[in-house]
Image (cartoon, rainbow, N blue to C red):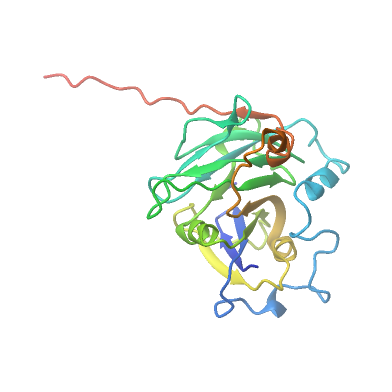
Length: 247
C-alpha cells in the first residue's frame, strides 16, 4: 500500500483528493465519471459535515472507536495545528500527524500561508472510513491530506473548496509511485458530485472542506464551531538522533 465552487481531483499513489474550485475551463468531461443520475448512489459531498461519517458507523467493519492516522502537508512554510486546551490551537507543525475517529468532524488551523503572512484558515476534515494497513504499521500508512497553494488561495478569496480523499482500487490504480508533491490533479465542475467521482476510482475515506470562516467571537458558539470537540490522538514522530562530528 502506497501511501459558490469548483472541484479538483488530486491523485496520489493510494490516495485521491477531489476538491471544488471555480474554473470550468479545465473541468473534466462529466460523462467520464458520473452515473446516470450524476450523484453518488447514497450520499453527496455537499451533505452537512458529519452526516456521512456517522452513517458509516452503522456499517460493517472495526470502525468504532478507531483512531485513524492522518498526515497533513502543504506548501513550504505552512503549518497545521489541532485544537488543544478548549478553543486554543497547538503549535503549528508542517508535517502534522494525528489520529482521528470515523464519524467525527475536526476543525484544524492553517498558518504560514505563502503570500498571505498573518492569515489563518480553519478547514474541517470528516473521516468517513478507515484504511487497513499491515498490523503494527498504521502510522506508516496514514491518510494523506495535501493542500496546495491553489486550495489556500481560493479559500482566502472567499471560495469554498471541498476535497474527497479515497483509497484507490488496486485493480485500476496508476502503477506509478506518488507523493503529495507529485500528485496529479483533475478539475471537475461544481455540478459534478465529488463523492460520486471518488467512488468510481476507489473507496472514499475523508472529506476536507476549506473555506474562509473564522472562529466566532461569542464563547457560546465555540462548541458548534468545533463540532463538539471530538476526540483525537497526537502522533509523535521519532526524533532523528544528532551525531557529534569527530575532529
